[in-house]
Length: 185
Image 1 (cartoon, rainbow, N blue to C red):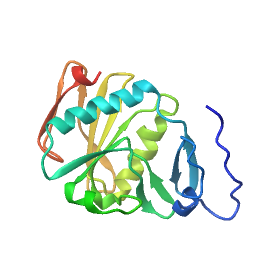
Image 2 (tube, rainbow, N blue to C red; image 1 turned 45 degrees about the horizontal axis):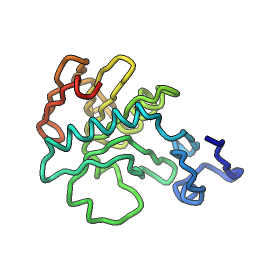
Image 3 (cartoon, one colour; image 1 turned 180 degrees about the horizontal axis):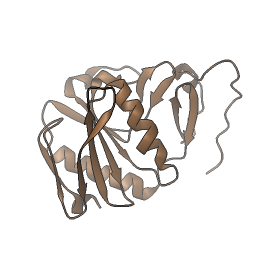
């Protein structure tokens, strides 16, 4: 894939409005505190894992919730993320805005990027907690785990569970569900 052609941006931090002026070239553009982060489209294994997990969650889903792939998540004009999966209230699907807000998201899921795992393990962990997203799952293909994080009341996440291949992950939030990690990995 060719390198993205991004215009020079010298006047202050990147904003969500700046993102919508970029070409639709297949790259993923996110903003972390005004800095532009450019990622190639996910590799097949990454996309496959996210799709298998999405399907497993959909089979157990509630009529009150919907699962979305890679939606734009608007936090502030200089903070914009693209989680691999999110669970939102189904009624939110009727809205036709450009992005979701953090208050819409009950669960954000990231499949760890093999090229830059710190984005999912560190940057997004802190960003999603600061935005008030109640649950964050980190799906790591390297060690075949799903780590469940929940807001801890101090502006961060605490680890609620870690499930490994060969185990089942059971959760009550955002709705009661069980995920067999043998199916995911």
